[in-house]
Structures are given as C-alpha cells and as structure tokens.
Amino acid sequence: MIKVLGIKIIDRIKEAGLTQVILSRHASVITTRLGFHEVTDSVCSREACIILHLNGDPADTDKLSSELEALGGIDIREMTFTAEKETLNINSVNSSVEILGILVERNIDVIVSVQKLLTSYGCNIRTRLGVNEVFFGEPAGLIILELKGDEKQRILLENDLKALKQVHVRTMVF
Image (cartoon, rainbow, N blue to C red; front, side):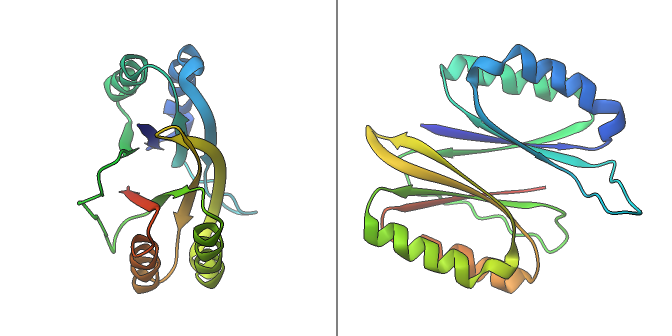
C-alpha cells in the first residue's frame, strides 16, 4: 500500500510550528514532503498545504495521522493506492485545492501516454511532484499534482488518466 497525506493549515502563522513538531517527531515515515502557500509581492496567504508521501509501518503512519488530527486548526485528507480501483471521486467547484495522485506502473507505453496527457492539460497543473515507488514488488512512479483552472478540464484530465490501464488515480480536495 502507498499512502499520501494532504494537510491544509488553516492559519499558517498559528499552526505551522505545532504541525512541524509533529512532522519532525515522525520524520522516519515521511519519504517526501512538499509544502506550498500563495505568495505574491502584495499577499502572503495564511493558508498553506503540505503533501506527505509516507512509507513505513502502517501503525506508525496511522500514529502520525492521529497526532495531526488531534492538533486542530488543520484539515487532513488521505489517498491510498492498493490493488483495488478507486470508487470515490470528489469534485468541488468551490474547493480551494485539488490534489490528484497518479500511480503509474512501469511500462514505457503507459509512461509516454501519461506524459502526453499531462502536457496537454498543462494549463491546469500548478504544481507537480514525481517520486519513484514500488507497487506490489514492481517499480512504479508516483505523480502528485495540484490542479487549478477550469473544472471541466480537470475532470477530463482525471477521466483520461483513469481510462489508461496500469494507471491508478486518487483525488483529495480541500
């Protein structure tokens, strides 16, 4: 099983330090961490998001999740990749952050197809992170996307990816 945790910090200035203490305490199960918040010359958002790629004993990753949930001031989502197909799809027009997780089994034709799709929908991909993974003993690629822009295009991207064999798609929306 592959687990990705999404954390939305409601008030970065108040909650980020407490969140960091918990993440540091559980660093041994965090393989990859991506944090982002809106910053311009005139605005520094109080909201922030952290995406964690977890690896390790499920009891340890569950303990991390439990400690974060007890913290308050943050919103947590989880996506897991197992042999089962995803049945739940959450799309929200009013969401502020939509994260798409894509697990691609190692097959050059599939990899090329995924890359072509991501390129064609590039205007809807704000952030992209790729990491190597093992899925049921075989090499795989895990791609995490932060999507923005037209909702219809985001849904088309998700559906086009789900139509590919050897591609597993999960969503989390804040």
